[in-house]
Length: 211
Length: 251
Ligand SMILES: Nc1ncnc2c1ncn2[C@@H]1O[C@H](COP(=O)(O)OP(=O)(O)O)[C@@H](O)[C@H]1O
Ligand SMILES: [Mg+2]
Image 1 (tube, chains in turn orange, blue):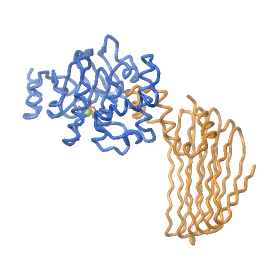
Image 2 (cartoon, helix red, strand yellow):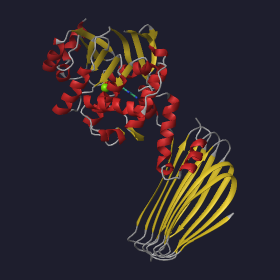
Image 3 (cartoon, helix red, strand yellow):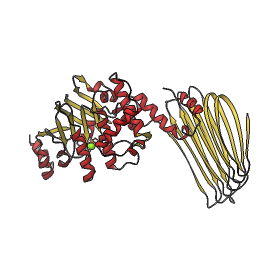
Image 4 (cartoon, helix red, strand yellow):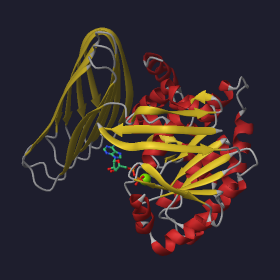
């Protein structure tokens, strides 16, 4: 399915896409001068969900916030291929994608931020964090910056981690059962995105986190 | 209450505890002193059930039960509390959520119903007063961005909420300024009853002014090399450990 989103000059748009089952999705997002987009992907695959996301700025002072939360289980798979084209100076983008991976599931994250030489005043941030909750879960993450301009503020980062044994022990030592401690840590990891979601979607995402 | 018999424990295949014997009775206060690296934190970690340590031989009996068979949370439910030398930071979990979960599971283990939000808040307020903490503590991440003193006060706050029978306090007084020491010292003291026992790991006499020990033990190289009354702390503060170590080596 292809989704085209155009944000006209000075307009704002905030959307949450809840993705379930299996799907191949394409999102083309164009933001005109001064426009603001805030788009969140909540990806809960049964099979494979592939996302191709392309953002273009079509005027100055536009901004785009992309968030993603993927919770993969069984043999489920989530993938994102994101291109953030800063073709216009003075635009802002911020991407935060977080994933919880269970069982033999996997996720792929390819994110490219392109800033040509003339696009000074660009601010572009990109982060992808993953929590592996089984030995068999796999993740590949490749955030990339292609920056040819000076005078820009850009950062990117990716992490792949597991539950923190010291934190689990600290909680257990206070009488919090290991199971609850594990769940609290997963919630803490996902909170940054979960907290921004509307209640019904939040509930569906929470349901997806095993007990 | 607690009997430790010939306890040996290692970490990463290195033996750290080399035969600890210690008996702690109800209502008693024991201080454990000793140079850095002696194994004090290892001992308290083993008693709390930290999985990085493996017990290679010996036994620990707590209220007639095999403590070493119990999971860390079961030990907590049974009344064991470890005040960490370096309290762990848990980003993203607020103090309130953390303690709410802890209280709920403690009550569940005793077959008690959950506290209502109001009852829980009342409990927190009452116990925060013990360590002079203000309400903003509750909404902060567990120990995240806390100063050294705040972390130690948080340990005592948690102890006050959980009301343990056996509190193991690992250098709760280290790195505290005079004010924080007073707060922590008074906090510990106010939690003392005829029924609960304390093991206080410390380098200094100053905490022992607040909570006067019945016994002082010196731990060195994985063994208790001397046990005496409370006077020993002053002597150690004056003369250090060398004379005790020499005395033990000459035996
Ligand atoms: N996780 C660990 N891995 C390796 N060595 C450790 C670990 N924890 C403690 N040790 C070692 O065990 C010994 C005792 O440490 P510890 O129990 O922390 O001593 P204390 O609390 O008396 O200063 C030290 O030599 C220390 O280096
Ligand atoms: Mg120590």
